[in-house]
Amino acid sequence: MFIATNGQNYPEEQLPFLREKLAATDDSKWAMISTLQPKNPITMLIISIIAGSLGIDRFMLGETGLGVLKLVTGGGCGIWSIVDWFLIQNKTKEFNYNKLVAYLG
Image (cartoon, rainbow, N blue to C red):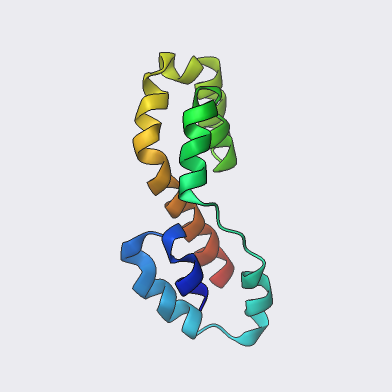
């Protein structure tokens, strides 16, 4: 059920692995897993379009160094911001996947 409702937030090629890991997870971890709130890739795209040149999208993904660099350079004079519009959804899915795998152990 977790994958059925949150599948769009994780890399598609990793969904079978996540299904197996979640099926093998004991009940004691489910409370912690159910509190995870994955970031929505479409919301991150909107944030990247609106405030990407300030690095907010990178800060939200835990990439503080890149967020500061993007802030200082004005999104790489706008070029980096435009490139991120195409990359940010996959980065968000990877972030969600890594966070879930870390909880699963």
